[in-house]
Amino acid sequence: YISSEFTDAPSYFVKRFNLFLSGKTAGESKSDMQTENEEEEDASVEEYVALTNYTGSGSDQLSFSSGDTLLVHSKPSSEWWWAELKGDIGYVPASYLRQDAAAAAAEEEEEEDEDPWQDEEYFGSYGKLRLHLEMLSDKSRTEAYRQVILSNSASLRNKVVIDLGCGTGIISLFCAQLAQPSEVFAVEASSMAEYTRQLVKQNGCEAVVTVLQGRAEEIELPERVDVLVSEWMGNCLLFEFMVESVLVARDRWLKEGGVMWPSSATLTLVPCQANSYYAEKMAFWEQPYGLDFTPLQPLAQQEFFTKPKFSHLIEPDDCLTTPCDVLCLDMYTLQVKDLEEIKGQFHFCLEKSGVFHGFTAWFTVHFESLETGGATVELNTGPNSEPTHWKQTLFMLDRPVSVFAGDSISGNILLRRNSVWRRHMTVTLHWSINSSTEETDTTQVGTKSFPMWR
Ligand SMILES: N=C(N)NC/C=C/[C@H]1O[C@@H](n2cnc3c(N)ncnc32)[C@H](O)[C@@H]1O
Image (tube, rainbow, N blue to C red):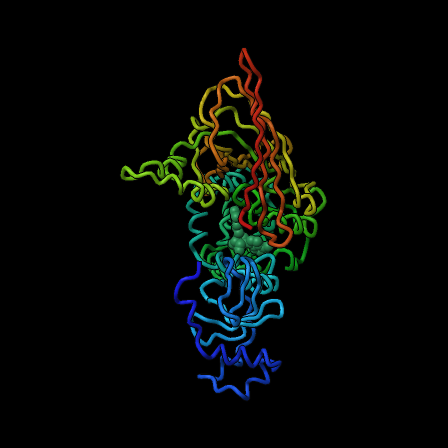
């Protein structure tokens, strides 16, 4: 379809085009052309991608197919540009082109120079109070770390501790306030560190706590440590991959026989209902104000169900069965290379009928006691514990499946770290639903990958 405004090409092109046909290149023709404004001639060639097919009319228009990459030499008007395609040059309708593909490619070029750890953005975000306020306001999280220090206070006497990623220094202050370690190195890479130093002084802990500003992988300590404590867990346990920093610091600074807090981390999964979320994002389009908006549902699926939903609060009743621990990380033996790809199996026997909307994941970490046989402290972020700022992570299937008591759902989960963007991963779920009724045994299989976030 060629709308009317594309037929009367400005005379400028005809002159340019004829010069081109006469074998003069764009450069040579410059001297012969009095263009309205010189800089169009000088504009560097820009790559554009054709949005759709176009059949040029008249010998001085280019024809092109959707997806073609055109080199735009100049843009004398908003409707018509002077472009080149596979050696041909002519004018093209500007509105048929988009630069975002080329710009995205350029952007990609640019991003390649971007830090794969995105540390400027990452540590920039922790230089502000918002996230620290959220973490400090999370009572179950913060009280769990306080409980660890309190219940190990005797054993912490004269010990050397590193608090990795100390933020405002809360854990280090607990150590100095509730126990008598000989030294706590509070390591913080963001600009929060200078305030953390003030908090240490303000609370009279500077004799014990030393704040070091820098990345844990790069700072130098005067000695090895007895205890490495850190609150490193991200959404779905690993997002942000701060755990890598913890492992590097462990290998570099933890004494033989030293203690890791947390000592282990478990990822738990459960098939679940998510009626309200589904209603809000998908069912909504069925009849808003009595109209049928269902053609928007594929968009809704793409926009709302492609990525995991962070901070989802699942009700215990939404769990279709008993949750299953799919991954267990031992913080003493886990290696950085193990983080590239972590796989876990699951097998669920459904105890009640319902709608299988997706899977929900959460984590639990354990802090072993410094005293042999002492009590382990647990921080559980699941639906049967006090909610935390992480809440849970919801992975929505493309479409819900009705399931019945007696059915089983088995499969595996794969956390694959992004090889470029080192704080990101993709979670891939494979599942098969086995329904057994008197007549038939049916199996429905499914798989879906959820980028988090790249
Ligand atoms: N996501 C959760 N739970 N906690 C995030 C907590 C992150 C805190 O630890 C700091 N941090 C993270 N990685 C490092 C590192 N390699 N060296 C020094 N400080 C670091 C951040 O700046 C935040 O203050």
